[in-house]
Image (cartoon, rainbow over all chains, first blue to last red; front, side, top):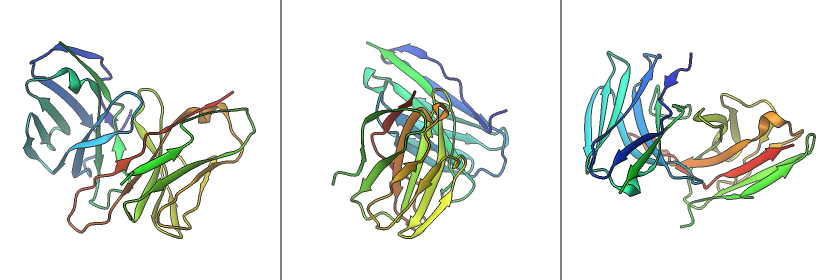
Length: 112
Length: 115
């Protein structure tokens, strides 16, 4: 069993839809949670960074962490074709961040 | 700032050949990382460095070597290429900020095929 599970998709939605992306994990020691966006043939870029349980909002993006269920989510409101990318969740035990554990990524396609 | 740059962009190797993947960052970051990304598998850490002269193994170090003689450069060496090393390799860097985020800045990647 992988330490971090993520549905690979692809997830196809119409423009303007609300998108929900999720990861589950098995290691209760993870405390810091990240979402990276990766466009085709590019390196990942950090979208959201959260510590412990709770919600964090940044523009159209909301990250949610439920440590009791070992479940994290990324919501995208008013999705745009430019949001089409692969979304990777990542997590780590401490803020040193030297050992990030990544999910396999979910490919999202937003159709105009 | 160019950020994190990687060369080459693409490379095809024969089994048993060796090569060095180059990584340079111009952000004066202490930490640098090498990852490999296989389809559907996310990124796995190969090696990392917390500063010039200091390196350590990640999750999948076998078959690779690194060195860090300067803050800017962190080359990854493959000594005896094997088909299992066919992957996309990403270099990343971050600054060591107390209380800061874990944001790692990634390069554009090197696509390596071993035949």
